[in-house]
Image 1 (cartoon, rainbow, N blue to C red):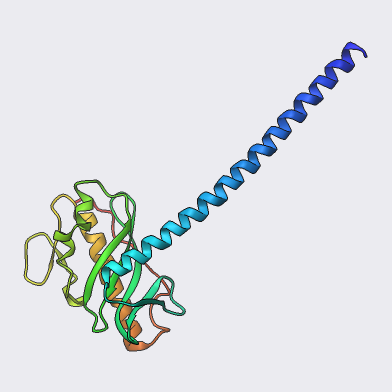
Image 2 (image 1 turned 90 degrees about the vertical axis):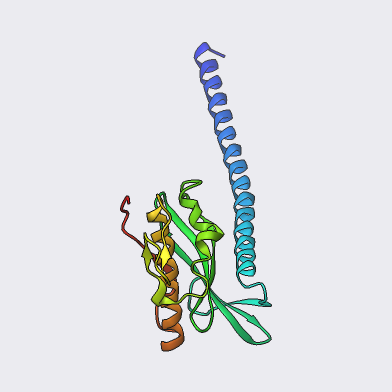
Length: 202
């Protein structure tokens, strides 16, 4: 075998080995992604179920509402206890995803945040009981954010007005959607809930 043939043979082997290595790496990455994705989806589903149960603990089942994306009806003994909608709203540092629970007479039960990127110790205060409890029992007419305490209004968090506004807007939008659904029928309103607020630094 000539020196040239030997070099060509070596190059072929190197190329073949690199190709096989890349192929095997691709398979491994694909398998890992598949199982990781499946596990992540299961975790998301479980998180949603736990969030709904936390909002309406007396519910026996949560029935998906036909024709609506991420809308659920909380039921017990064939009675509707609440409507739960997944709301997505732009906050200060990214989108906030949360379940909002509303009674059949269109009053807020509460909300549970699934994911967010708000500043720890500042923006995320909007997801804690002190701020969240302001919404309980309130209707559409009370969904007004204020910086100075007013009876029946939502008091913004100092230094986190954008997050406060985002949460208030999301809850209000859910109330509007549920009102439209109950008064105008299933075809009314959005198929899902996604709202935007002005990104103002205040």
